[in-house]
Amino acid sequence: MVADDIRTKRKIQQLGSSTLAVTLPADWARKHGATKGDELLLQRDEIGGSLLLVPDSPEAANALATIDADSLAPAAVERTILARYVRSIGKSR
Image 1 (cartoon, rainbow, N blue to C red):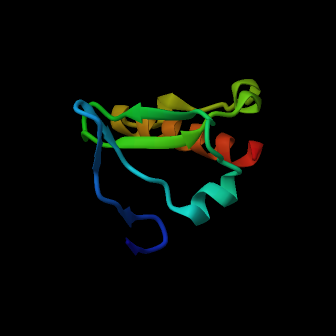
Image 2: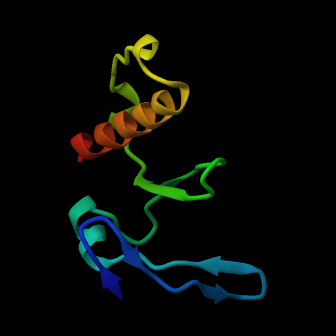
C-alpha cells in the first residue's frame, strides 16, 4: 500500500465470478469505527469518473449547511456541496 495524507493506492480483487472488491485501510476503518457488516456510501462523480467513500451515518442526514450559490461558478457549487457533505460526515463520527 502506498499512502500520503489523502490518497491510498489499493488493488482491485475479484470475489467469485462477477464481483470486484477493494479493501479498506485498517487505520481508516478504525478512525471511522467501520467494522464487518457496516454499510458505507459510495458516491459517483459522473464528470470526473471518481468514487467517494464515506461512512453511512444517520446523524449526517440531520446536518444543515448554507451555501451562497450566487457567488460561485456552477462547477464550484458542485464541489462546495460535496465538500460540505463530506465535512458533515466527519463531524458526526
